[in-house]
Every structure is written in C-alpha cells, then in structure tokens.
Image (cartoon, rainbow, N blue to C red; front, side, top):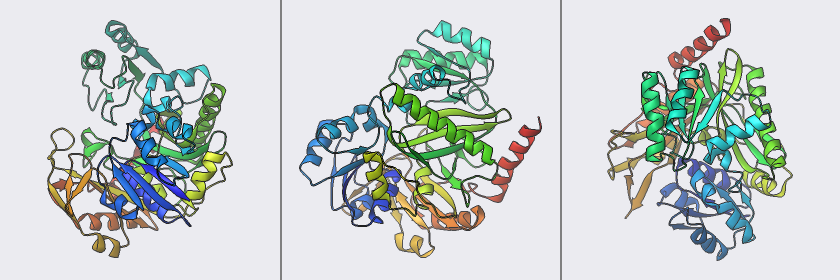
Length: 439
C-alpha cells in the first residue's frame, strides 16, 4: 500500500515508523521542513507549505498514492482531507467540518451541550469582553481558552497562569482584541481539579478502537513548574490504565468519545481518523478538557511504539469503514522531549544539534525528530520541541531509566524534564487522586 504522510514533527516521525513496520507499505511524505527521520523512511518526499491544499494535492496526484494520513491539525483545518478525497485519495483524517471538534473549541462545547454528551464542564462562549467578565465573576476560578488553534500554548488557568479574576478578565479581553487563535471568540470554563489523561482512538465514522491511556506533561520545568508548552513528555503504563486511573475512569472517557462520534454523524459530519480526548479525572468523575482531531504529540510516540496490529491496515480500515480492534503490547513507555534553551518563551533557534542514533538504539530506546531541519547533512533545531526519546519497559520506572539514558546521546543547547516517569512524580499523581476521591 502506498501511503502519503502530511507533516514533519515527532508525531509524524512516529507515524512514519509505524507505516514502515507495516507489511508491503511504501511511504510518500510532504513536510514543512526536512525531518531526517521521515526522509530516510520515505520512498519520495517533498518540503512545502503543508496547509497549501492545492500544492499537497497536486504533488500527491502525480504519485501512485492510494491513501493519505494527516499528522497535524492545521492542514485539517485548511481542508486537506476534503481536497484529497475529491482527488480520489481516501484520507485517514477528518473533514474540515468534522475537524472543528479541535479547531473551534466553541463548536466542541456547543456540540456536547446540544447532544447531552457527558463530561462537559460549565462554560460560556463570548465575543464581548464585558460579557466575558461578568461570566468570570459568576464562575469563580476559570480557564480561559482562545476558540481557535494556538499550538497548545493559548490556554491559561487561574492559579498557575492567572493569579486573580482581574488577570483572567484581562486575558479574556486580550484574546478577543488580539484575535489569539484567529477566531473572534473566547471560551471560558470552570476550573477543574484532578489529574489529566489522554485517551486516543482510531475512528472509521461509526466504530472506535481505543488505545492505552497516556499522561502528558505540559509545564516546562521539573516539578510541574514554568509556562505551558506543547508537551514536554509523557508516559503510559503496562496496560490500558494509568496508575491513578480506575477502569471506570477509562470507560467514562471512552463512552464520551463514542457519543461524540455519534453526535457528529447526526450532524452530517462523519468522523474518520484519529480522535484524541484530553480528559481530567476529578472527585465527581471524568470531564472533557478538549478534543483533538489527530494523534497527540508526544502521546503518539507512546501508543504507536506499542502497536502490534498492522498500522497500514488500520488506516485502510478507517477509510473503508470496517475498523477492527487494534492490539497493543502490554508494556510501559516513557517519552521525554529535548527542547531549545529558553523554550517556550525565548527559545534559541537555528542551533546545530547532534543525535547519536546508533547509541540510542543500542539501549533499546527510540528517537523521533521534531522541529528540526537538515541542511547539508547537518541537523538544526528550529526553536520548538526538537527531539523526543522513548523508553519501553515492563514498568514505567524501567522505561524511564531507558529514556533518561537516551537523552545523553542528544547534544546541543537543549534541555528536558528529568522527572517525567520517575517514581516520585508518579507517586505524587497517585496521592493527589487518592486525596480527591476521599473528599
């Protein structure tokens, strides 16, 4: 099977590796910058604007591509799936309308409200700053979200980011006036207390095949400190659950995702591709933080590294509407991102890095190139998350030791969170949930 991959980050490198493991699959890649890992796996590749649907479609039409898979959210929001489908190339990625589930947070919340989907917190959508301020007064502690896409960096929470209602009101006003996220509205939600987890699934429009749960770490520095990032790393346990989750928590998240897929179908927007539910387990149950219309980054690395089913066959099933349950090995994983010094606020850019791929692989670890560019056989970081390393083991702690050792084989002006997957941090998560469930 000849498959097009759109995207050039670490998530896409993980997708590329999964395709390469598939029987008889050939990869064609359209990237925004030369990811050396993806290029090495691809039969053919090109660099260009991945949101230019005509450029991507025309390039693909001149190749013997049978199916496409989309990595990031921005091309989905540009309508790439629709364009490829019109060219006769089925796509494992939702249509532009269905991708609103991620690309317009107000759409997602209103869909949940209309169809009475469980897990929806109290929320309001506003285009007027005065109305937003009054709603903040009525809720108390809140989360402020630009309605549109911000690359995972636009959400601010009272407590870690906003110290008072006045700061929350000021940020809501800034979102509207500066059009952060492009869309002219801001979503304001009640602040939820608990532990976040990611549940991803393959979806064919009606059937859903879930993956193991993963926990991402958004804050930049050890000890859950610092600004929000796109995600500094993540872990999964040896099975579907995380150490602080119950089977009921996992089941609640999955049921919410199933009802969301049914709701989209009723609205005339059948959803095909990957669905990523960002959930939070609280003392009152599981709530939805947000939906994403693609695999997570870094969470894709965790789950695809465990996938035992043929990935190319899964992609085919997604496009044909006959999805079967996927199989995953019962191992634990820990993923750690190396990022430029100064990230995310004032990152160094265009600095040379080196990745000793051979030594990483000797450890039994994996590596994934992210925001890099390769020029004349030299790899440069481009100012965002740069390289991810991943360890797989019988326990989270075994996997963490492998991942941490692997970071020593990546050199350059980079740093990473050393605490992801450690016993101390996981114990903190477990203890937090135990305390919440007692209240």
